[in-house]
Amino acid sequence: MRIGIDDTDSPAGMCTTYLGAVLIHRLREAGIRVTGQRIVRLNPNVIYKTRGNAAICIEAEGDADEAFRIASACIEELAEFDEEKTNPGLVVAEKKLPVSFYLQAVTGFCTIEEAEAVCHAAGARVKKWKNGRGIIGATAGIAAEQADMTWELLTYRSHTDKGERTVETESLFRAEEETFPHTWDTVDTENNCIVCFPHTPDPVIFGIRGESPEWVTRARGYVHSQKPVMEVIYHTNQGTDAHLLDGTIASLVDGCSYRLTGVVADTPVTGRGGHVSFLLSDTSGKVRCMAYEPTKGFRDIIRSLAPGDEILICGSYKNESINLEKIRVITCPEIVRQRPPLCPSCGKRMKSDGVDKGWKCRRCKTRAEEPETIHEPRTVSPGWYEVPPSARRHLAKPLCRGIPPA
Ligand code: ATP
Image (cartoon, rainbow, N blue to C red; front, side, top):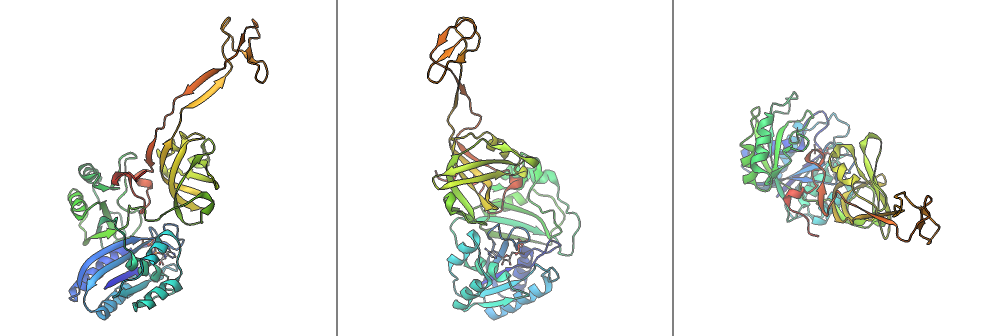
């Protein structure tokens, strides 16, 4: 069976992954064999999300009624019911749910009714609390299947502990140094900051993301922190670009995320707050692309683009612009400019003598037929560029995992 839970937390505390960790423990205590656990991230642009739009799916073998009862009790005990936006959902399915529902939830939007219909068709047990929106994530978490997956080791303190976390900064840098690129996003070396723990009062102490259980465990071994009450290694769709759709500019839908090829249509400009933007065009239209201030050094790459550059971009379309996650510069031809030549006789800059009439020196009347051609070197070269770890979204595939095929 698969057990899906979602929407149990609030900005003031709790985390659905923590509730999942507690539930795994309780299922085992009751003699139910847990065979796997997953964090399934869904559309990052969903407005109902608390933080990273994560759902939990636990794979288990045993009595489904008993598992349903234990999971319900766990949610009733731990979910943040006082928060208006917390609407927990629980699904226990003994049959497979259609992967199409997961694909819809990770790339687009779903309704509570659609989730209920999918569960009903498969004879799954469903429980909703308050408006029950959590069953969308719970259903999608169960339905999720994809070949490319990563891992995250999460360490937890008690959910009642809401103070400062104690994690030794140097030990996190050491973990990154010893295990990158097999693990990633523990720290941001470019911006000298820590990425792997939240700054909210939830129970996560820190999390290590990586390519296998062995690598995240190895990295975790370097980290010194307060003593966790639980540690769980989750299988996850994080870092896989599962949210991206291939599209054209005319086909963009608000709240969806895309991979698009186009041509830079104007010179990138830095606006108020340090956000950098430019227009991208393809044969179907034009769209504004944004590299926001938190993307730090990535903005220098965007500033170095020039009209005519052919690029591929990845990012979310929201409020009529694309929030960039990474780009591939396909071509960035040398910029060639022309200006009036210097007079070969007296050295003064010549003036145009009219359209197609060449140039003439105002001082000594010497004539020239050819302008001066300037070849401006480019600071950007073809290749992939991404936002730093501190600005990366959970689903965005880091380039250290391998460069996407051209
Ligand atoms: P955390 O990651 O800290 O556990 P969260 O960011 O996952 O919290 P939730 O509190 O779970 O946020 O809220 C997300 C809500 O949005 C859930 O009710 C979930 O069912 C719903 N949801 C998720 N994906 C979609 C989607 N594609 N369309 C509509 N609703 C969705």
